[in-house]
Amino acid sequence: MNQRVLVLGAGSIGVFIGGHLAAAGMDVIFVGRQRVLDDIAEHGLHLTDLDGGSIDVSPDRFGLALEPDEPELADLVLVTVKSAATASVVRTVAGRLRPGTPVVSLQNGIGNDSLIREVLPTSVVLPGMVPFNVVHRGNGRFHRGSDGVVAIQDDPVVDRFADQFRAAGLPLRRYRDLRPVQWAKLLLNLNNPINALSGRPLREELAERDYRRCLALAQAEALAVMNTARIRPAQLTAIPPELMVHLLRVPDVVFRRVFGKVLAIDPLARSSMADDLALGRRTEIAWLCGEIVRLGEMVGQPTPVNRRLTELIRKAESGDTRRFTGSRLFAELTGAASAVQG
Image (cartoon, rainbow, N blue to C red; front, side, top):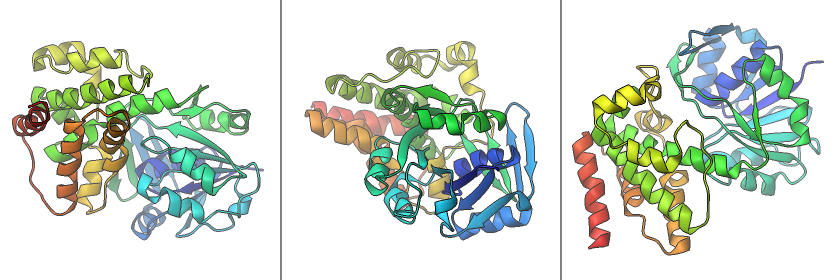
């Protein structure tokens, strides 16, 4: 009998991962917004990636629901909603899952799994991390525009579904402690607000030195606060986080030569935060730069760069449609840092 997977959050990541699982024969039910459900109900799924992979999944291969239907039948629950919706979406299955059901948070930020565990105390709740970017191009088309392997906190319960993920082309990298991995992913995600404010595709933005200098400012500040809090982020790339901060500042010609693979991103790929602003939705800035601001407050260390990025994204959420050149955004961030130092 096929395992049933309940995907709470039919967004780009949830649909891409759930679609691959459905193609591999798992019984997948997507729970999400009407707009996305209507799209994939009409067109099915066409899943592609920057490596040339392509998978089609017809609508009869998966289920759709606005609210969880019969969650007690789920063998696995994937939480893929934006962090702000975590509490509300998991409450829809509270008291309805079988005891011991694995629930995996595949979300940005730190601590979503702790919140889920409070709401679902009888489930086995595990944090996970999705390193790659997925773009929803409409008409059932979802494209993975960057590389990476899904990470998960190790637990014996993972043995129940690890083989199915591998068969679906989504091998799981298991970690004894996922927190250092989550902090490392957060460092990378500090580019999300920079990309959103730039209004440019990811590859184009990262190719420009001034935008990378903005990211270096945000990451350097974050690493300083983490160091004070005795948090050691994992190394997710070939370059350690501390060294990456310095290398982000090199001239464009050097960056292209040394870090060509960093730019191995689909030309149309954008951050999820850019997509949220384009759709008029609240972003996850509180779970990205906001995490650094809160950590800084906890250890008594100022975080003007991440605070300013948060403020600029909040303005964008409120309708400010300005797009920042790299030099202008760098001036905003250095000015905020100088004001605190002065």
